[in-house]
Image 1 (tube, rainbow, N blue to C red):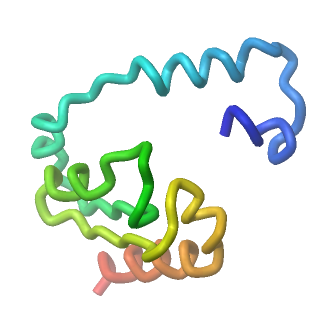
Image 2 (image 1 turned 30 degrees about the vertical axis):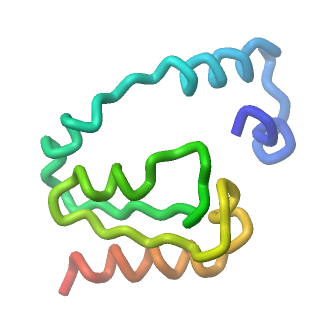
Length: 98
């Protein structure tokens, strides 16, 4: 978002906003052991070959999490599969109402 947020959401009044976001991403430290504390239905979606996020490990750490990996995609899987991404989210939300 820090890279494309300006074009998607408009210019910020403070040019340091992008730097703050990058710093937050780099310094964020949420231990994987704490994922087990999540008790709500959780959907994890990502690219099968994403080098930046621990998508599989995150899903494995959350009890009953649903994992969807877009085969052949890396970090921008969601941007490159917008319609499928929207469908997957809606399907997940509908599952909770059955």
